[in-house]
Figure 1: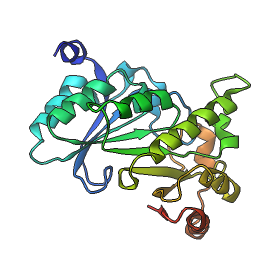
Figure 2 (figure 1 turned 90 degrees about the vertical axis):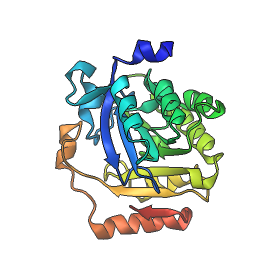
Figure 3 (figure 1 turned 45 degrees about the vertical axis):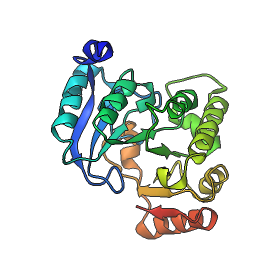
Length: 250
């Protein structure tokens, strides 16, 4: 109760009150929490990533999110916590706790760069999500392209270790409670990248691909990147499916 009183008035994220697509098998609410440690050039949630939280339009407080979950608990069955990067939010635990109190199933989306926090959440029965979706954004060798705001020469190796550990943690979950997701961004995902990514995914993975949208990208140069044609995208996903049978274009 003290935690809720302290956090209730704090702005946390943008709330989508009803979603039929964010949590497979559930009518859900989705909150996109503010803040991210990556700067993926194709990201379209730019306000949540680069703006001060007080400058983001339509942002909800912790209390407003919980009140919505209370009001809609007879209709909704799922609560999706996304971002930004949910695992760096100071409000993650309280949102999971309050949603679980109302019998919501919890789906957590993560960019894969915070394995220690994910491991702590998975080990805590009061916080453990029912479903985890991990973004596999590009191959290990290209991870440094996701953090152009950092200059550490070893950053690619550091990210590689974190992403691999996260993938292992997610792989240890039952197959029907996890998925991996990749956006087909031409500069970041080609056939060689797919081969490299598949190497650290479990063979029974659900690997969901989505087409890249060259609109409102964090890096304006990516607005000029031509997405793969449907035939090119299908060929890449077919290659992925030859390595991970559960790969498909969503």
